[in-house]
Length: 141
Image (cartoon, rainbow, N blue to C red; front, side, top):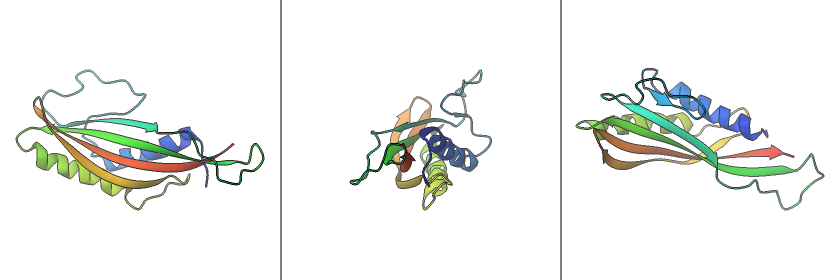
């Protein structure tokens, strides 16, 4: 089932929002930050989402308005957990993110691949890890 770029991104972010703990301060795209973000003494996350290349048409393209284009994108969830126990806490949060996307497909046909967590390491008082999920969806134009 094809969808627009906006619909695809909204569906991806909705899956993520449902998966993250409700008490985890999170900066989503297009949302302002609350005062005191990021917290000085707590875990937090920052989310980015983008398409990584132009939509690719299939080998046999149809008429304008009925052409299906496949687009790839990437979701990055930067996880910051307090140093000391940060690696273990980031692994737990990272696994929560991965579980939300593994084997899933949205109502708009967005599907996910290559979910992974890359540990960056110490970053000030936090341990930094990135959950990375590649996705793909089709649009009709």
